[in-house]
Length: 161
Image (cartoon, rainbow, N blue to C red; front, side, top):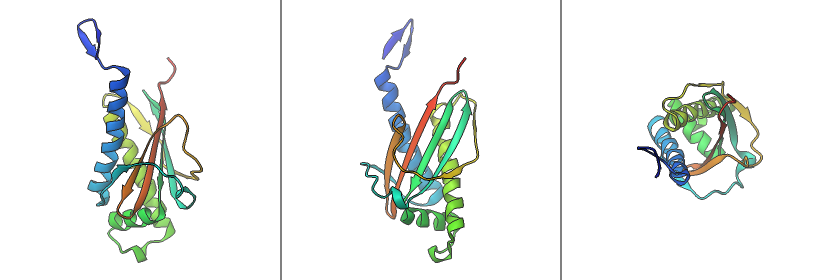
């Protein structure tokens, strides 16, 4: 840690490690607790994006930006049926989309509250999007689930003073 007067402040590398830890740990905890599935951070392969269900949540306040989520179809079906308590054969495309939107909202709130617990950030309504590529400057993590894959990105800035 770098010293600032008598108070120790984390170095850039330590802040980066904290961000990666939060971005790896919190989504896995949310998926296990709320969607009854295990998720492990994994190496990224994005060849499955073409068929993925994708969403984003914009946020503003002390930090502003967006979080994006892509979910493979297999994972989306499994997550939706577990969350809704229905069999996979009972799912409709609309139900699948609604659960992915809710997952995006829950993940965004959970990650932001861990990243900046003292901040005031308002979340926008989750919205569907077509995920064609990985946003270049965003913090990114992929997860392997027993039923498929998810990818998560967050990109933010501090608002102008």
